[in-house]
Figure 1 (tube, rainbow, N blue to C red):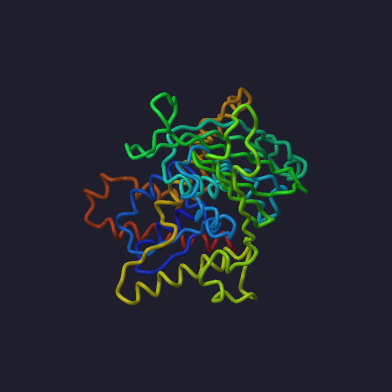
Figure 2 (cartoon, rainbow, N blue to C red; figure 1 turned 90 degrees about the vertical axis):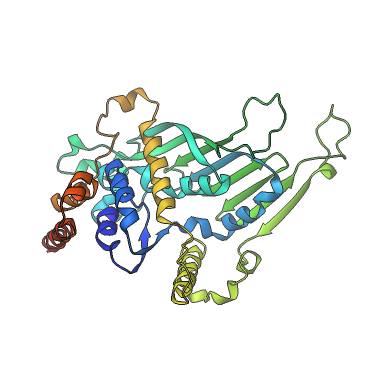
Length: 371
């Protein structure tokens, strides 16, 4: 329910760290876009994967590999853990796996490439973990749409500029290609996350939980006999052990070990950046979040598009999957409708009062639900 909360509190002069995803449906995305220009709050989105030491080191090394042409992100892991009311296994509450889980990775695709996605197509498995997630125990199990358990998503990126280095006039494709691979039944994999970025001059790879980064540069003058594979001395390899935070962040000493948090200390680093932004605001400067609301919205939009572009005959039999309407309450739906109803906003001089009445109704409904 992040979107209704943002619509409620975004109009106040406060600082908000909102968990991802900022929205789980197209309607929520549209409401955030409509309301955002009128927000007074300073908003930062919780995308802590950006700050995982190995991933941040990879980001630092990207300029050395030349123009990026391929980005591969893989997550092979254990199934979703148990949460309150098992909301993370519910399509309508989570937006499904490619939105709720993978918005982290879509955010990284944008950050690494510096470009926007122009096209995508997905192949998915759904319901393989039906027994593990206990769908049979639900009251209306015949209506349950199981969440996605594994997927491949192919993506195309383009910065829509003429500044991208063209390898040569005979190249057939100048944009950046991306591939997301997800498997939620791969316990025991050597690497849970892998990020591999390949440019025209080299390649950089990040692995977790190993927390190491490998940088390679392509052979140059030492590869003289092109009838044989390049000799080892013709290309370079540098390995960075990112478990030592000082090798990645200059302020590593400012992070107390006892407060390092989860995701390889990235949670603490996220908070460090947020506190710095708040201090800048107190000193009369602008609030500049490391991850803006616009970043959060775009990551969700990529997830929604990947859901809409699933290529599967089986998915065609599940009309409720795309678009997802999102689990909500009557009052939160009223709030979304109010934001999206531009004509009402234009014609109603008391729209602010109406807005607050819906917010009050949300408060009362949440109290009832909690009780």
